[in-house]
Length: 103
View 1 (cartoon, rainbow, N blue to C red):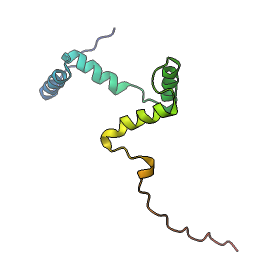
View 2: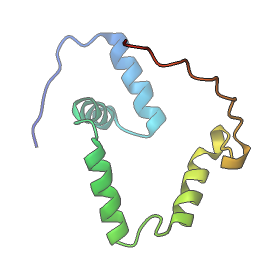
View 3: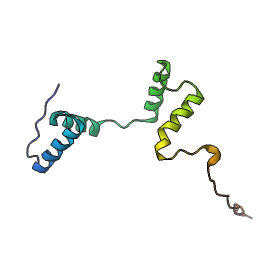
View 4: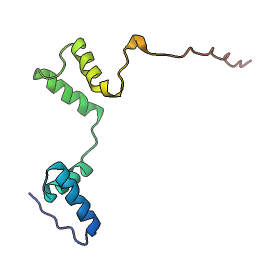
């Protein structure tokens, strides 16, 4: 494992790191490692999500049927007000304009 030393760290930053570490139940070193790891992590791509989902399905984890997937999605979004598809209030569409004439 590598080590780094951070010099000239503002006292306020150190204090906020100490508070944040305590809130997460971590040492200051662990909190700094977590922050640095998250900051330099490669953003997850769509392919990463698909690969992870396929691996979970192959291991028998996660939703195995469409109904189980529906329930999992519903549970995930319940806190923000999941709406059943037949309850959606979709406004009526306006008529489309006539296509242009290129005579």
